[in-house]
Amino acid sequence: MDYLPILEDLIKIKTDNKIGVRKAFKYLSNFFNNLGIDNKVVEGCFVAYKDNIENFDVILNSHIDTVKVQLDFKKDDKYFYGTGVIDAKANVILMIHAFLNSDKSLLVISPDEETESNGIYNFCQYLKRKIKNKKIRGIVSEPTDLKVCIGHKGRFEYVVESFGKSMHASSVNNCINPIEILSKVILDLKNIPLKKIKVDKIYSSSITPTMIKGGIQSNIVPDYAYVLFDVRSVEEDIINKISNFLDNKEYSKYIKNRLNLGRHYADFYMLKNKELIDKLSKYYEISFFNATCEAYYINKFLNADVVIYGVGKLEYAHSKNEFLNLNDFDKGIKNIEKLVELIKE
Image 1 (tube, rainbow, N blue to C red):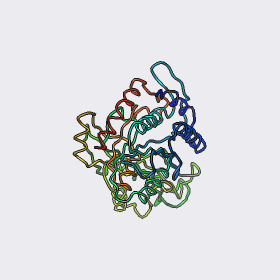
Image 2: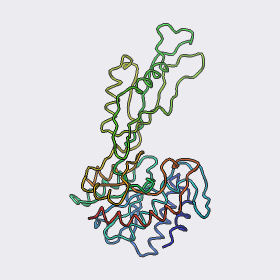
Image 3: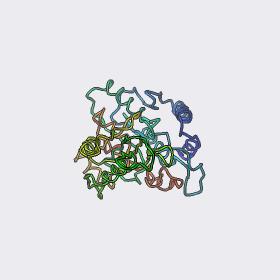
C-alpha cells in the first residue's frame, strides 16, 4: 500500500484543536470502512479492530493531535515537512501498517497526548474492565529515530506560589517579597539531588522554570507571585521529593507548592522484562525516549510490557524545522512488522 498520500492528507488536517482531531478521526474511519475493518471512537480514542475489541495480544498506539501549528505542509522528493509530520502522524501510519499486517492487534490513536492525555487514560481504564488479567504487550509510536526505546521520562507541571504583603517598593525593611522568595526557590531547586539512569547513554531528571508571573506595577512590592516548573523524571516519586525538599526550607511558610491541576501526567516508565529487552537488542538499537509519552498509562492500567518505536528525530518535533526523511519512513514501515512479531512471541 502507498501510504504517502494518506500521510499527506493527515498532515494537511490541522489537529492542534479538537475540531481537527475529529476531522482526522473521520478520515481514518472512512479509510478503515473502505477496507471493511471495524472501528469506532471509545473514550475519545480512535480504535480499529478485526474481530472484537477484546480479542488482541498487542496494543498499537500513537497520537493524532499536534502542538500549535508552526509549519504548514510542504514536500520534495526526499522529505515531508510540517507540524506533526513526525510527532506523530508518520508514526500513526506505522501503527496502521502494523495493525493491517498482524493478527490479534488493536489500533488505538490518542486524541490529546500533547495536552491532557484524557483519551488514553480513560481508554486504558475502560479496557481494563473488559480484559481482566489478560497478558498483553504494546508499542507506542513516537519519533525515536528507528531505535527501540525501553522507557521514557515522566513529565509534570509543578507550581510554586509565594505570598507576601503589598507595599511601596521603597519600604524594603522587613519586606516579604514573593518575587525574591521565588528566586530562592528556583536557585534551590537547581541544587536538589536528582537521579540519573544509563541505557545507551546517561539520562537525567530535570526541573526547569518555564513560566513566572507576579507584580502589578514597577513601584509596588507584590503580595503574590508564582513560578511554573517543567519537571522531567527518570525516577519514581519525584514530586514528593520536590515537595519535601521545599517544605524544609526557611521560606516554606510563605509558599504553597503543588502539581498544576487539570491534566493527567505520565510518570517515569521503564520496561523491566530483561528477556524481552535482550531479544529485541539482537535486531534493534536499544535506547530511551528522552521525553514523555503514553506508554506509562498502558503499562500502569493494563500491566503491559510496552516499547516505544518510530520514525523521526525527537529534537525536530515541536519545532519550525519538523521534517520526515522518506527513506527512514520506508525503513520504519519494513521494521515495524518484525517488531510486532518479536514482542508477541
